[in-house]
Image (cartoon, rainbow, N blue to C red; front, side, top):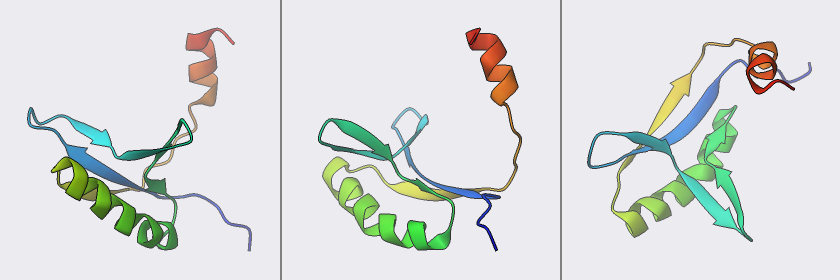
Length: 81
């Protein structure tokens, strides 16, 4: 069976003002957000997220998104691509 993305997990930190942001890590100048489409990816990112939490002092939560909507055409119209 071909893999299909029907859910996304995101590691999200909460700032002091209550705003949220996806945890990311910089490797060789490229930023990589901590998101995944399966529990295997969540398990692999978890130790890295704990390291970020320790370094920043910002706790994180893992959010599970299950709604799926293709918005490619809408974005292309807005960006006039």
